[in-house]
Image (cartoon, rainbow, N blue to C red):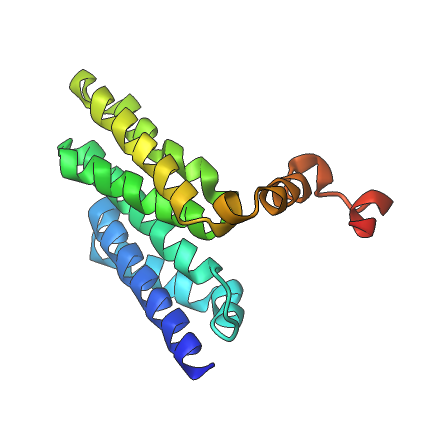
Length: 166
């Protein structure tokens, strides 16, 4: 249990660092400090630091994907596109609700130069591939994967007798 809490703490600290770096990139040192402090004091972070869930891990990878997406836009380096895709795939692998993150490299490609499209599509494919590999439900139990997607679909977010039965 203690090792699990240390693991979660390390990912929370990693997310703080990534948000600090993103804030510096977008608005300077004050923006970086504000982003890190707002994350550190958010109730879901404070509460989540006491439980062993995949969400802190996914938050780190998603934040890292956003940082690399911004860097890919600014510098159009191949490495940043692929790091964005890799981080987005790991985020989605940890939490299926973040599967949309695979589109982050495409978003960077849409605003980058014309030559970036090939990189963007390759990075998005990498994200989808990593999400599939790192999500045990998808490979080991497709029926559980389908059930989770059904429960998490927007039409099921409202409480109804059907969802309570499941």
